[in-house]
Image (cartoon, rainbow, N blue to C red; front, side, top):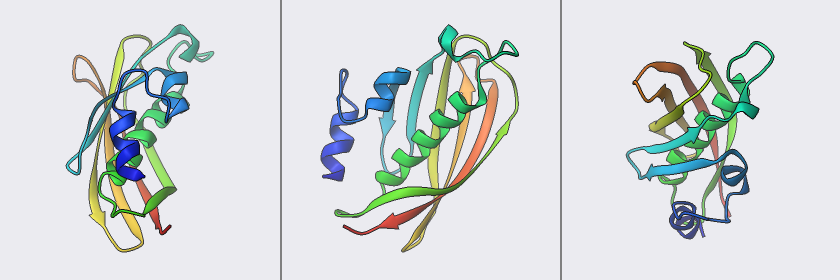
Length: 137
Protein backbone atom coordinates (compact mmCIF):
# COMPACT_ATOMS: atom_id res chain seq x y z
CA UNK A 1 0.00 0.00 0.00
CA UNK A 2 2.78 2.48 0.94
CA UNK A 3 4.68 1.93 -2.33
CA UNK A 4 1.43 2.20 -4.31
CA UNK A 5 0.76 5.52 -2.59
CA UNK A 6 4.29 6.82 -3.30
CA UNK A 7 3.98 5.89 -6.97
CA UNK A 8 0.54 7.47 -7.30
CA UNK A 9 1.25 10.73 -5.42
CA UNK A 10 3.98 11.55 -7.98
CA UNK A 11 1.52 11.51 -10.89
CA UNK A 12 -0.02 14.74 -12.22
CA UNK A 13 -3.71 14.84 -11.28
CA UNK A 14 -3.22 12.36 -8.43
CA UNK A 15 -6.11 11.80 -6.03
CA UNK A 16 -4.41 9.98 -3.14
CA UNK A 17 -3.37 13.18 -1.35
CA UNK A 18 -6.16 15.79 -1.36
CA UNK A 19 -4.01 18.23 0.63
CA UNK A 20 -1.53 18.42 -2.27
CA UNK A 21 -4.37 19.29 -4.62
CA UNK A 22 -5.82 21.90 -2.24
CA UNK A 23 -2.50 23.71 -1.84
CA UNK A 24 -1.17 22.98 -5.33
CA UNK A 25 1.86 21.06 -4.05
CA UNK A 26 3.88 19.30 -6.75
CA UNK A 27 6.13 16.32 -6.16
CA UNK A 28 9.60 16.85 -7.62
CA UNK A 29 11.20 13.71 -6.19
CA UNK A 30 10.59 11.08 -3.55
CA UNK A 31 13.30 8.54 -2.82
CA UNK A 32 15.04 7.02 0.17
CA UNK A 33 17.66 9.79 -0.20
CA UNK A 34 15.29 12.78 -0.16
CA UNK A 35 11.86 14.14 -0.86
CA UNK A 36 11.42 17.41 -2.73
CA UNK A 37 8.12 19.25 -3.07
CA UNK A 38 7.24 22.57 -4.69
CA UNK A 39 4.49 25.08 -4.06
CA UNK A 40 3.61 28.05 -6.26
CA UNK A 41 2.47 30.82 -3.92
CA UNK A 42 -1.00 32.30 -4.41
CA UNK A 43 -2.52 35.53 -3.07
CA UNK A 44 -4.70 33.42 -0.74
CA UNK A 45 -1.56 32.39 1.19
CA UNK A 46 -0.76 35.99 2.24
CA UNK A 47 -1.54 36.87 5.86
CA UNK A 48 -2.36 40.29 7.34
CA UNK A 49 1.29 41.36 7.52
CA UNK A 50 1.61 41.06 3.74
CA UNK A 51 3.76 37.92 3.52
CA UNK A 52 3.10 34.20 3.16
CA UNK A 53 1.57 32.70 6.30
CA UNK A 54 3.99 30.59 8.31
CA UNK A 55 1.49 27.73 8.40
CA UNK A 56 1.71 27.39 4.62
CA UNK A 57 5.50 27.05 4.83
CA UNK A 58 5.17 24.67 7.77
CA UNK A 59 2.73 22.49 5.83
CA UNK A 60 5.12 22.22 2.88
CA UNK A 61 8.05 21.33 5.17
CA UNK A 62 5.99 18.76 7.13
CA UNK A 63 4.77 17.07 3.96
CA UNK A 64 8.30 16.91 2.50
CA UNK A 65 9.59 15.34 5.73
CA UNK A 66 6.67 12.90 5.90
CA UNK A 67 7.32 11.71 2.37
CA UNK A 68 11.05 11.28 3.05
CA UNK A 69 10.06 9.09 6.00
CA UNK A 70 7.53 7.10 3.96
CA UNK A 71 10.21 6.33 1.37
CA UNK A 72 12.32 4.74 4.12
CA UNK A 73 9.72 2.51 5.75
CA UNK A 74 9.35 -1.23 5.42
CA UNK A 75 6.23 -2.71 3.81
CA UNK A 76 3.31 -2.55 6.21
CA UNK A 77 4.70 0.37 8.20
CA UNK A 78 3.31 3.89 8.29
CA UNK A 79 4.31 6.97 10.25
CA UNK A 80 2.93 10.06 11.96
CA UNK A 81 4.55 13.34 12.98
CA UNK A 82 5.07 13.46 16.76
CA UNK A 83 6.97 16.75 16.97
CA UNK A 84 8.14 19.44 14.59
CA UNK A 85 10.16 22.62 14.89
CA UNK A 86 10.49 25.35 12.32
CA UNK A 87 12.76 28.37 12.08
CA UNK A 88 11.72 31.12 9.69
CA UNK A 89 14.70 32.83 8.08
CA UNK A 90 13.25 35.14 5.43
CA UNK A 91 9.76 36.29 4.48
CA UNK A 92 8.32 35.66 1.03
CA UNK A 93 5.31 37.07 -0.76
CA UNK A 94 5.34 35.49 -4.22
CA UNK A 95 7.13 32.91 -6.29
CA UNK A 96 7.73 29.21 -5.84
CA UNK A 97 8.84 27.43 -2.69
CA UNK A 98 10.83 24.20 -2.70
CA UNK A 99 11.11 22.01 0.38
CA UNK A 100 13.77 19.31 0.41
CA UNK A 101 13.79 16.79 3.26
CA UNK A 102 16.05 13.93 4.25
CA UNK A 103 16.10 11.34 6.98
CA UNK A 104 18.82 11.91 9.57
CA UNK A 105 18.25 8.73 11.59
CA UNK A 106 15.79 5.86 11.30
CA UNK A 107 15.31 4.00 14.54
CA UNK A 108 12.93 1.10 15.07
CA UNK A 109 10.17 3.37 16.39
CA UNK A 110 11.25 6.98 15.73
CA UNK A 111 12.57 8.60 12.54
CA UNK A 112 14.37 11.96 12.70
CA UNK A 113 14.12 14.19 9.64
CA UNK A 114 15.27 17.65 8.53
CA UNK A 115 14.07 19.95 5.75
CA UNK A 116 14.98 23.22 4.12
CA UNK A 117 12.54 25.51 2.35
CA UNK A 118 14.04 27.80 -0.30
CA UNK A 119 12.82 30.06 -3.06
CA UNK A 120 13.91 29.84 -6.71
CA UNK A 121 16.83 32.21 -6.18
CA UNK A 122 18.03 29.61 -3.61
CA UNK A 123 17.36 31.98 -0.71
CA UNK A 124 16.80 30.08 2.53
CA UNK A 125 13.30 30.74 3.86
CA UNK A 126 12.99 28.19 6.66
CA UNK A 127 14.60 25.16 8.24
CA UNK A 128 12.65 22.40 9.94
CA UNK A 129 13.21 19.30 11.97
CA UNK A 130 10.76 16.63 13.03
CA UNK A 131 10.33 13.25 14.61
CA UNK A 132 7.94 10.66 13.24
CA UNK A 133 6.70 7.58 15.05
CA UNK A 134 6.77 4.36 13.06
CA UNK A 135 3.45 2.53 13.19
CA UNK A 136 2.93 -1.12 12.36
CA UNK A 137 -0.08 -2.36 10.39
